[in-house]
View 1 (tube, rainbow, N blue to C red):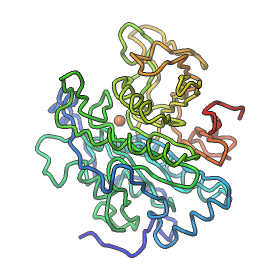
View 2 (view 1 turned 60 degrees about the horizontal axis):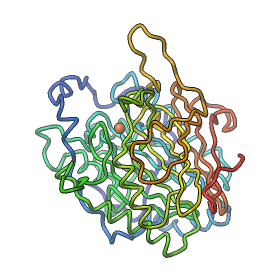
View 3 (view 1 turned 60 degrees about the vertical axis):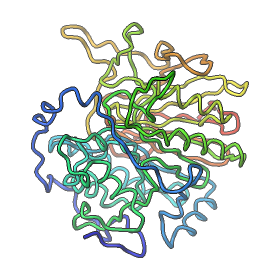
Length: 443
Ligand SMILES: [Fe+2]
């Protein structure tokens, strides 16, 4: 039975050894994949409307219980907020476990070794927490135990692996039902999935929500259960519905959230987090197919762009996972008469796997793009005037995570490789955005 507590708990009071094996045996999922074959490309997931009105905020303070007010004051006094983000952290087999643990341990070490003013306040997981099908029985090994020493809240948006329903799954055990039990609880509760550990379930209002923290709002959207593309609605257009069964509630939610930003003249950073990346590298402009394993989601991006245009507010940056590597694009877009630099960051090397950006054809050499390469061919019928899309930097060989910091003036997004050492040593990339002008500034 779930146990409710008066206050949230994040980590264990005693630091324990790094796990060496899964507690629950995880046999190969090949048979399941063989059985589902193509339905993975067409079966979408219905989901519940989030609690509260579409323009409601989920304050960081509320996730921290009685310590919330003090914690928020400390962040404001420090003059900046720092947080972690990464996607695709789960390990679907024992061989991959060490990669997941390496990233999780670095997040905890970063927390413990940072001083008060730069200590991360939370980890925002960008989807794909439990592989391969979001099973409750694997939450302990793939989520709770790796993060047993992380002393802060972990928020999450579900990925495709946290939402695709294997045929025959009971309603109470569908991946989204399990996700909701562990991330969208109404009370601070220890769930059965936590086993002997004490991290309480997160209290997000839904699978989509806006985290309101000092200096930053993160609008998290659920991009559903397909391998590709990501989608945030039924995509009903011109009398045609692409994805019957997917509610359109996130469209109204996004519009309401952006309208609130405009109405309040909110001056902090506005980030949009969505598991499937709007852009993931592909080289061939003819095929519009991914050069790596996962592709772009142009229809989803078009819907987001149009809602932003109607609201008159564009996010300062997009954060995604799904593609198992690190990619950072700058999209130069004209919005409200100004030219904006918008980072689109993919951080899907959180532990599950690493894929190279380009999958070489048999017998042919691997030809990868250089840094700072124009990839405007990856724009497909953009809803906004796009001057350029540049692949600024990528790392498709190392696991890692994002360390994001925001103060009154700037948003900084850094990618750190999970290789140990100091933060300076592990940092591979950094982009800095001026919040007032939405333009890149020197780091
Ligand atoms: Fe994914």
